[in-house]
Length: 260
Length: 248
Ligand SMILES: Nc1ncnc2c1ncn2[C@@H]1O[C@H](COP(=O)(O)OP(=O)(O)OP(=O)(O)O)[C@@H](O)[C@H]1O
Ligand SMILES: [Mg+2]
Image (cartoon, rainbow over all chains, first blue to last red):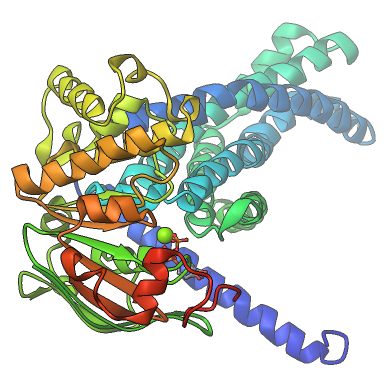
């Protein structure tokens, strides 16, 4: 069938996509609305901060360190062609804080957190725990979605800020040990030329990515189909959609922040 | 009083409820019986607003539940889910005391825990299960924790979806006794789904049988044996031959 009517297939998937965008937007709107209406479940929020922020540190830190190191090698190779090896510290720092820190951090957290939120919430849906919440006068959106979304939005910038420092240190380590940079010069070059907007723009991106990750986890979890297969599919969809949305919104934000 | 008026519900092409009419008087114990998959659980979920019926009206004390203020409405209900539906991230006592730990019924933690342990005792569970997690309990124990949670805030109206399934006969007797007590002593309205005819006779003031999407028979439990309804007769005696096809 699909082979016979390619136009129909394209039409169906476009309609499906538009429908999905509408549903996600509606869900996000509802969630944001609930953030500003009491009650706020503070204990669930703290647990989410611990899980999303603190326990993601190792994975974000390692990613940043190796990325910073690789970046230093590549930029050195590129810079050498223009006899401009001295740009390495600054470009590593800019690349890290503006772009790779938030994006790679966001993607790693998407893999870790969006998946686990979707699996947890999806299982709750499948085992009627969401219905049980409602009968106990507790709104699932307030109890499950709001704490996770707020926690992710607030902790991602902190996580990425730490990742930025570790990433720059990765570049520094490679620069000093492999590329014969003077340690003091490397650090001075980084600090003197990096502007605060470079850092702040990256942290703003991180907040948006955090929002996307938690929202996708909750959305797919709450809309999980029945059974173990449903939860599995919800988990996959959460990671894939969070990753795609991170990359797409990263482009849009970069355009907004830096297109002069 | 809860009234269901001409409730219809279909999932895709599958028509589950096709015009359910039922009245549950206040302070009485109504038991719903009927074959597996006939839509008994769906019925309860429609009343609670967890599932929206395709058409029909549900009235609680004469007011349409669809337009009722949700929080005040739900505060009057307790529900035991067929699968227990315990929150597996919370310990047993926190599950039972869920309502007492947040929202309008919030009270000090120590007091909430005490109430939870008392409710656990009433469903035959000892205080040392209070700090376990649902995953560490057997199926029947989980069911009883769900029961304790449903009655913890002493709601006026309680729904029990198969309260004795998975329990040994003695424990089933204890639970039947408990449900009866809640209705007679606390004056609660109870709606129980069960497949166990012993339970039906122990719990019910009135019985309703759901078959083929409608209430096939309903009446006082005393009239059940002499109803003359071939569907009900076949069901309560568990006969293979009769108007209800055993192999579907
Ligand atoms: N979310 C759903 N999507 C599609 N079909 C559903 C859904 N929920 C229930 N059904 C169908 O509705 C019918 C009635 O389900 P219900 O859970 O009310 O049965 P039941 O009478 O409680 O049975 P049992 O005694 O086995 O618990 C079943 O045939 C089931 O397949
Ligand atoms: Mg059922």
